[in-house]
Length: 122
Image 1 (tube, rainbow, N blue to C red):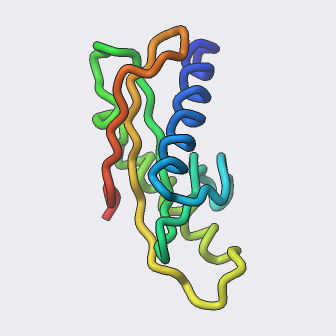
Image 2 (cartoon, rainbow, N blue to C red):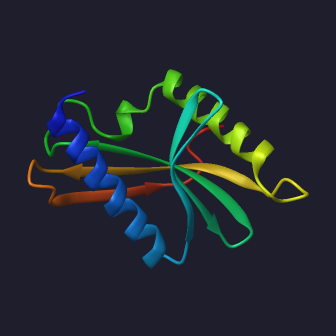
């Protein structure tokens, strides 16, 4: 991954976390690693635990952020979510889902579009 892509990804994750907080979510963790995968944002939406994957692309890229969520990446997200659930401090597994936040962001870190898609991984 290029430095520009890393910078764009970090800016998109920060933008997504702010978006979630403004939408009433409570951000519990960022860049959680475990079980051979990573979760960009772990948040609570009322009683529900939400594992959020943030996908960032340049505006007018050949592949949209939504299209970049591959089956392989989905499997890694599920492994990390399972790891989180096994190690979280709740006695009963809360209801949970995996969301996608797709961000189109330019080289200066200016977001052009944000889409929040709920329950994207079965």
